[in-house]
Image (cartoon, rainbow, N blue to C red):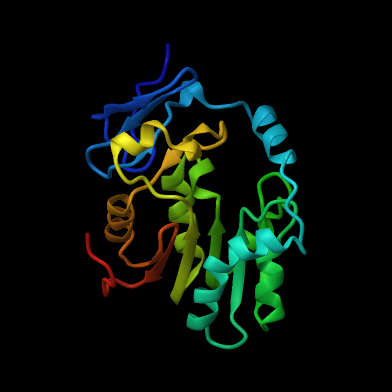
Length: 221
């Protein structure tokens, strides 16, 4: 018997079919506005790992570093000297962590497939980076709760993921075509996340947001 479909972020059992293509359906939750692929259409762990292994990102890839700079440059402007960070979902080539280390910050690494060191998930950090990760999470509610617990009182989570704009553009959006992308967030979704976890949302640019510990809201929908 199949498990009843529910939003993987807020657990609402009310949702609409937002879009579909030849491979998958995309549902939207009316509560938190997360767009998500039903679990029955997810890749297996083996298939997912095979997709990740195709990536060719390197520590010295200038194009990749320029892409990541949209996260680490504004982050560097907000971090006190010698901060401690966790690069969550860093992948096989943790280029973002290397850039932050070069600016004097200590970095721990965690990745389910490439750096599965659970010890780093029992410490506290000044900041956590989560770049091009959150769209891959089948259970974003559990991961966000975990990351929140790993933050020090004045800490922040830097998230990079492309955001949903509207239904018409979503239907032809290249970002949804990656078979490992299963959750898609709008600005309204991030506002829901900030309220739910009692954090403050700062919109950095079109695909970067910072979640600050505390509820002094920086951006409102």
